[in-house]
Image (cartoon, rainbow, N blue to C red; front, side, top):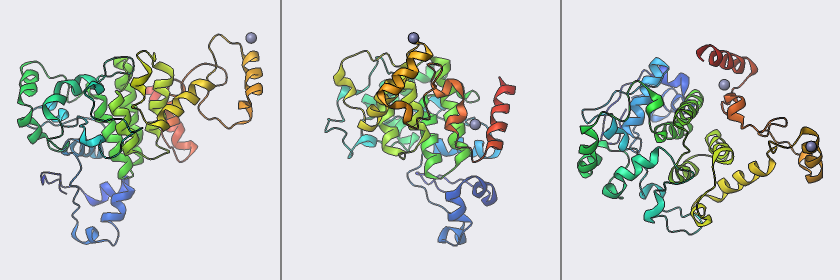
Length: 317
Ligand SMILES: [Zn+2]
Ligand SMILES: [Zn+2]
């Protein structure tokens, strides 16, 4: 397999085809790749692919850094203006410098983004850590002097963006289990740091996932339930309409924590909400689905797998 800088990865066909419907069709079917055994993936980050390979063979997240070190490798995942280009949202100028926000909805990634954003601006493609390294030597040096911000063996320390890009990768190549694990990884990292993902990352998610994406639902829930909605309204104008509408609806349907069940039921009736099939509102507590059951986001095909997943979660806790 080829990464962007023609980095080669060798993967057992049977292993990758078992997990990925995409590769099953490409490698184990009758297409050209099926005969040659090669797949070119020019726009896939080798960083993401390396994490994917460890996950594929060992069933967990860990990272084996290049000589540049994990922080520089991960910095290559930073969302650039180019990533958000050509698909303007609300006609807003997507390259406004204040886009690296640091207020209410902000995130750990804002650090990564702020650190490298100015120096890398649309001259590098996301996919190439080596180019990124040379063009942002300043920020690289700064981080190299200190202890690594990210720990290779501890995904809880990883930038949210790593999991977001893993999820996008998993969606593109149809790897259901990786989607679930990436989302869990993101949730764990977010719980650890009590931060929300950046506006930029939200926009990236909406540009790179499908309508029914569980990652979309997850970030909608995180925002609806945890965002303080501070700052001026104009800051939110940069966010995708679908996202804003989903947050609005989620918040509008939430059970106010101080309202008793009886009043809530009455309110549901009077607004007509009771007749709707709403899957993500707890009718007894004001709790987001991720607080109640992460399986809400896991796309389990049957109840058996769902039970096994829940059991695994309680034993590891
Ligand atoms: Zn009441
Ligand atoms: Zn599950």
